[in-house]
Amino acid sequence: MSNFVAPEIKKFVAWDYVVFIALFLVSASIGVLFAIKERKKKSSKEFLVGGRQMTCGPIAFSLTSSFTSAVAILGTPSEVYRYGASFIFFTLAHTLAIIFTAELFVPVFYRSGITSTYEYLELRFNKVVRLAATLIYILQTILYTGIVVYAPSLALNQVTGFDLWGSVAATGIVCTFYCTLGGLKAVVWTDVFQMVIMLTGLITVLIRGTILNGSPTNIWQRASEGSRLNVFDFDMDPLRRHTFWTIVVGGAFTWLGVYGVNQSTIQRCISCKSEKHAKLALYLNLLGLWIVLVCSVFSGLAMYSHYKDCDPWTGAFISAPDQLMPYFVMDIFSSMPGVPGLFVACAFSGTLSTVAASINALATVTFEDFIKELFPDMSEKRSTWVSKGLCVLFGALCTAMAAAASLLGGVVQATLTIHGMCGGPMLGLFTIGILFPCVNWKGAIGGLLIGITIAFWVAIGSFIYPVPSVKAVPLDLSTAGCILANSTDTLTTVAPTTAPARPLLADTWYSLSYLYFSAIGCLGCIATGLLISFATGPSKGEDIPPVLIKPVCNLFCFWSERLKTLCWCGVQHSSKDVDFENNLPNVTTKKAETDDAFQNKVEKENQSQLPGYNPEEKSYTNMSTESRL
Image (cartoon, rainbow, N blue to C red):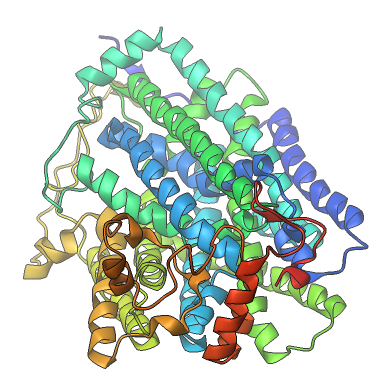
């Protein structure tokens, strides 16, 4: 076997910079385009939710682009390279998350006529619950966005020579620029462009890697010999980092927290012109997630095949596993100027789309949940300017937070950990609101606090006491074929040092797979919320607007009207009482009305459809949002 000499990785050349800069210019120009096109539309709802006239196609591209990000482009191939192709089971986790989002959460949010997801919590419980959830969401999004900005900038800096803080600043400035100018429509259409760039970059790397390694058969055979295809691990041990169960079950909870109740996702779904378009956008987005994941997994296998005799990480040619993919790209495209620039554009496309979506979502929840509460009589013109100002503010905060992201480890695990810590309890909060009419506001706030406490406890503990190597050991990585440039010495692996003493919880509770953090927070919130609600007196069903409840329990009580009534605690769940498809009463007004007036209004609305409603599309035509409500 011939020894592998680590190549001298070339830095960016002029053509690489041309391709990369072109991405930023096109993204910024889309913001300018929509600023000019929409200049006469001064409504804050036009700015924040696109006037609720978006179609499923652009929204599907936008969702896929935003939640792919550079984390998937850089992190997933690295995970496959080191731990094997079990990441492919995330296709099942994504599928479960999208089905529950489309069939359970989106119908409730869309029919409620809300702009901020957290408006639902005030309608269902009270303002205290809404504000608590909003603050947790803001914390989660700023932390997550900091990783999204920092991680690819660091990896690309150390491998390509691209300036670290220059790329961080450029990302923040460009995203803030087009998000502030064009609002949600600019974010969505820029995401469409960036999704095309991401797929082009991934497919280009996959094709080139396959050619250099002989054929797909060669890659598959080498991956099999290196145990990268031993993916069917059905071990039930929750301490194992990646098994079938941790990825499918834990991953489903994690991604349901991202898709089902996340403002960034729901904001784009409710911007669709009909509920049908919103659901279709989610299912088309699922197809996009599968394509990106499959491309990323096979890129990781191609990378392993290329470096199976000389691992650049253990060989110290790079300083962190997240730099593997950029190193691989600069290696295989060293003789093709401009193509490395395309990959950098690919990675940063994910970053741009994610950051822009986060900025827009943060501005929306802050405006709806805080500004409008403090200044209810603010004019539409001033509301639009305040919304733009919030985009600038959060753009600066997210960019600044990138400086703290270096402490959080690998990008994939760090991002999913943050989603688990915050997204799991939030998922539990919305779940008890929609599925359990008996839960009152005390149970909701108590469940949220306990869920977030448990999730933060296990996540911070796992950060302080890392998982034992026996539970998260990478597969074999060889340096037998490595020779340093101008040297004939074969690299050797340094023996690990003795681990320090660990407390009892470190090898049990703190060693739980990071993919279960979301499930723990969610289930802890649900269980606590139910217990507190029954202890303090369950909520009265007649006080809850039916449109805020999804009648899933009817599936389990179809044989008995008495059981239906019991499960729904008096909420008007029957189609004889409320037509969920065709009558969407104003839930905001209902909360302020007396019980008798509320009952009379429901009976009146059931006698005829609201004007302008299209039953086939489940949408309103020729009606403003205000008149619909």
